[in-house]
Amino acid sequence: MQNTAHYPSLSGQGIFITGGATGIGAAMVRAFCAQGARVAFADLNTTAATELVQELENLPQFFHVDVTDTDALQQAIRQAHDRTAISVLVNNAANDMRHSPNDMSPQAWRECMAINLDAAFFAAQASAPLMAAQGGGSIINFSSINALLGPQQMPGYVSAKAGLIGMTKALARDYGPDLVRVNAILPGWVVTERQLQTWLTPEEEALWMQQVALPKRLMPDDVARLAVFLGAQDSALITGQSFTIDGGRT
Ligand SMILES: NC(=O)c1ccc[n+]([C@@H]2O[C@H](COP(=O)([O-])OP(=O)(O)OC[C@H]3O[C@@H](n4cnc5c(N)ncnc54)[C@H](O)[C@@H]3O)[C@@H](O)[C@H]2O)c1
Image (cartoon, rainbow, N blue to C red):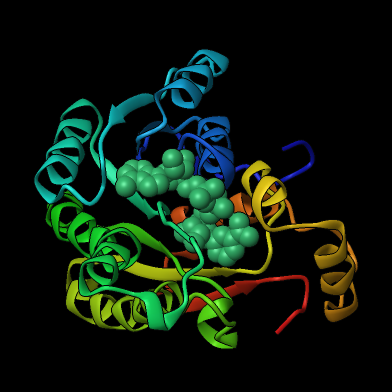
């Protein structure tokens, strides 16, 4: 994160990130810590989370929480708030597993919505009043360019990510009077370890590079810098917006 912006308004602020142990979430934990913020994050991956906490000097707080467990998620948010008042919530946890529309059971569909859509709503529901009580805050929802492109074999994920764009608009209006801002980030294909291990083959990457305007790998740190900006006071009058970061793919 050298030669990048420093935001004094984030110093000492409480940040809550879902899915912060790996990938883009871990990059955001590092990026907000580098701004001097007090970061808490929820994840299921205890091994990766423990390594991340040990790596960082200002010791982020880790909650082993399944974000589809609404009570546990909302309790973790309140507990983090008791340590340091939360001014930024990042709804990042997701599951992009592929599935055919023909094979999807009602239960599998509900589980897909629970992780990719519902958790963001209930995290916002718990956080917004806490932010309002201290004069405002910023909620950042992770959508995807797949909400715009609608690729095959992921109708549940695409529906949920499109839902997050609408939810962002709706909550920006509902929470705006309390100066709680709500924005969405739509990343393109971000080169995380998991993407490299599961979907991003050399052939797929070569195709991606032909489709983008900027033929450079999109890295988790690139996305984290946008999230940090949306969390900081530098974006104080921005709400209800969706920001695409995809090297010009869409
Ligand atoms: N990586 C990409 O190319 C890409 C592209 C577009 C959008 N996005 C979005 O950006 C966000 C981050 O992406 P990523 O690739 O880093 O995701 P990821 O799948 O690699 O990581 C998500 C994190 O969430 C955690 N998690 C998963 N289910 C959980 C649960 N039920 N409870 C708690 N934690 C849980 C995982 O352990 C992991 O640490 C997601 O919302 C994703 O949809 C990513």
